[in-house]
Image 1 (cartoon, helix red, strand yellow):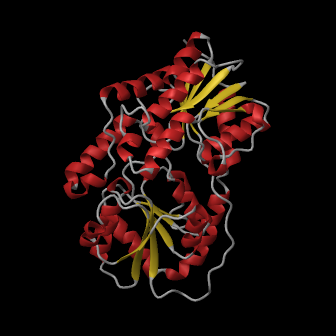
Image 2 (cartoon, rainbow, N blue to C red):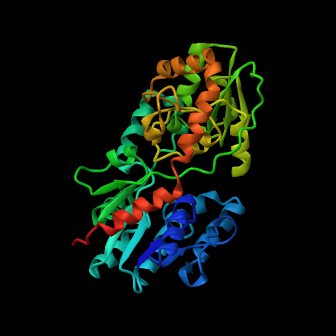
Image 3 (cartoon, rainbow, N blue to C red):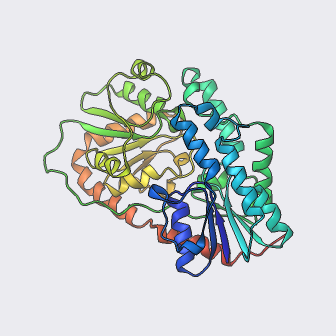
Length: 385
């Protein structure tokens, strides 16, 4: 039986918890809050909720006390929420035969599990911190004006030491992409289990061709996701038949982005169903990311018929069939990105076939396949000291 823990319910741990329950393998799922958007299809006896640190953090956010909710060392900060849950789980391993936890919330659990000889599984949703720090540090030097948007982790040494020990204690690391797997220290036992896609939406586009190719950038407006390179590519093209829509959260004043590239349409963040609707009204997703894990927006876009212009660092290398579902471009290469955008603009008649290919590719990446890979890896991994 497997004990699963994560402070916040999200798409991928929900899929795993429910799959383990269907297979009769779930001992318990420990989290903070599990209702509303965080609800799971689990029987009550499998749920362990530890709400109060998370309730305090959310209250601080609601009151505008963002420093308390985010800062390292705050008793109600996000790091404290992770650590409180981790310590509780470490003292309540019950009848588990294995534990499954996530970055920043696994150390106490893994230490206790090792003492009991339990197998320890560690999911790393984004590139290992050493790789992320290196790449983002290079970006800050390459594009200093964009450095404030990078969201570069400013973790103190003690937190980095925790991350390193978590990885060392794991019997197996589960990665959502080959990019994350390649970021691990040499010799780390790991497996790739790709995230799943939402169900494909029905084709509802008109037969009329829009006068301009509509590109979509979706996500935080940061150079970590390559937005500066998108702007640079469009400045190189300077084409009136290409337009850019940006949907996401600004990390700098709007004036900064308009100075970098004035001619984009801004769309604020919105509920998931509305995001998918917006995608259905665009022609391609552009995401030349520098550091990701596996950006789910790629598979969401595929499910709505959008070919991808992405880097391998966005974590979706396996999603690309060149000329079919899109193209991979190198990181930090606006010229290569501009070339692919120009091809799409010049070959609009190829888009219907590409939309069919993208929707098929999205359907091939299911959450069931993701959970099956993880369960198979658990079953073939032995415990170690």
